[in-house]
Image 1: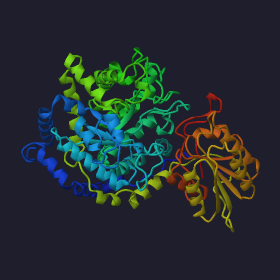
Image 2: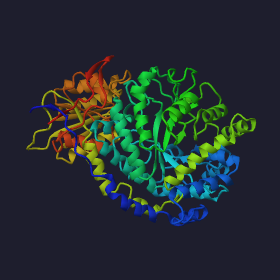
Image 3: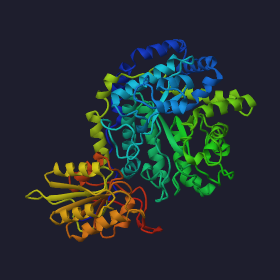
Image 4: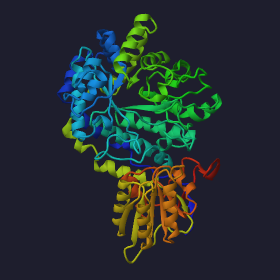
Length: 616
């Protein structure tokens, strides 16, 4: 069979905007009585008398007029709360905030936003309960003296950073979309994700990632980026901003400014230094953020990184006035909301104490303090800075103005609450799942097929197929997808391949099989010798082997014996279904590498270039 590079552009996915009217109708039904309460409280002039922008101005001015200084500081904070119900006490809230219930935290600190995580138990009792939790948190915010609804946030990047799981629709993540090369697909993915988040009461997604991943050793970004090419990343970021905001109806946040793509240090545990020159920053890191600003992004999130060419002080960008105000605000003309990345991360806490970090972030130009490590200390430090004249109330008013306008424009003021009973009809809707599968099919990338093994030739009898390698859920999903096509499948998950007995069992099973499909995750790393040995031993059996890299596309460089290899950039079931479709010839692979794959041990050399991908 003749092989060729996948150079043709994939056909566009169904337009996400086709269902906009239907989604708006659903959201209008989800308002409930709480929305009517907010509308009654909001000082809005009749529509016939004043334009929408004037009503927004009236709301913002009157709301700020009745807010105390402490409430303004609270509006500039986004924190997390523990528990599945707004009114149920949790000792972890008491330890962090001195208040037991999630609702009590919102009321006591007058929080402007809440962010959800799995480890806060926000998602542990299903999406309907999450909607009830969010409604309860909104009730707490609206019952306080300021009467301002919350922005409720999550990191729903999709792929490896996914907070809201099944039954929500899953997509393979940013780098997979970069491989698909379709801006419309990226927009559709964001639109569906945004609609489903809004259904459970989440009105802000800390996505898309605007970092250009030019460093394969990057431990914190990697497949969270759309790729290593600034133009590609820019196109995808702009498309997703529009998908989240214009189609999905929620706020997007481009992150991590001024660019976290070229680091070998994780800012969660250390302080990375980016050695790009100003010109390199302009060419590599800046374009996606400029594209996000031009697309009207609601929020930009800061990075806890040092960039000496932009600010030689040694302060992380989050605390850098030359970067956050001089560069982002003044040079790039951005006037939306700036949120810090989590202030619990080590990268922002290496030079200053937690109270000083909060003050310096606001001095630098941030509007929102995300997850202060010591919330009470952060509030007291900001109030103290105002009392001393270090910060002015007028400076705080600038930030509160931006935050209130964001809530107005995203419809949070008009519809702060949702209908838990409507959640099941939105999350994982059949049309959403179908779109996700079509998009994912266009992302699978064939990196090697030296023996013309793919697509598999029709078989008169069921093939004995061994599915093995990394990931319990991943191998199970891939096994199910292969079995659905008539293969007689055995699944033997081996994890990272360090258990000798488990690996030996998989190799023994391979010797009696017609085909082996083996998954790897991060097999290129120095700590991945177990996965490398597993694949080498499977190849040595002489049985045909299909290798599938379910995260980084760099794995192929560390597996020289493999003659057939695919990259999915994701271990989700939707990606494993696409693998089975490609392997069996149901779809032709059109994904193209969104990064260079370097030669193992020689990052300056290229094994497979950006844009490479086989098709048939």
